[in-house]
Length: 161
Image 1 (cartoon, rainbow, N blue to C red):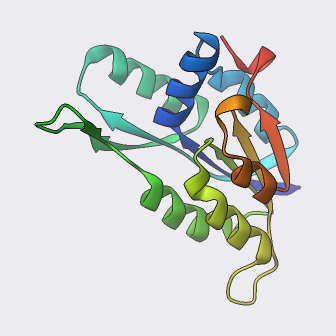
Image 2 (image 1 turned 90 degrees about the vertical axis):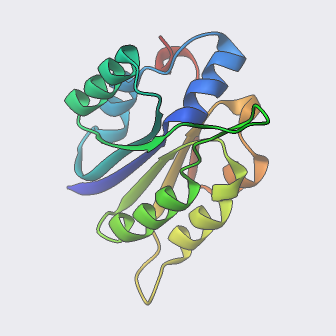
Image 3 (image 1 turned 60 degrees about the horizontal axis):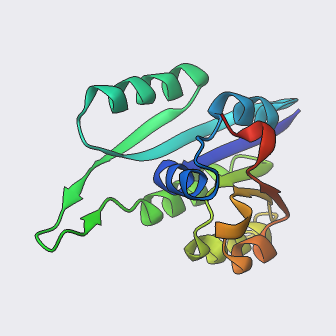
């Protein structure tokens, strides 16, 4: 059986689906699609934590689906901007856990991940390269990330609530 490691940039998928469609990502349908006929090695959803009840309920739903949820505190800067970026954490985990999987699935449209995807596909430290599937909102996914992926799956239609 093919093994898979899944990494979801929750903030990216939330904001891009809301911006493009005014809808939310369907994590249950995504899970069914990404894991069909595959053994899950690791599945992590990365989010920021504002500490509110609705967010905790959402995080519990992710856990019930099968995700480990990693949280960073939401930091509001004095200038009004916010910080809660998981790029380095996602990269480290994808390199570590992706090594044990045949396929790596990344849910994000962030072009910063194009280098990670290229590295996973090339292989690391003598390991064979991985198949990397990237899910993202088409008009808000970096072209460099789409080009780096083994397969790009647009988030649309059945992947939306």
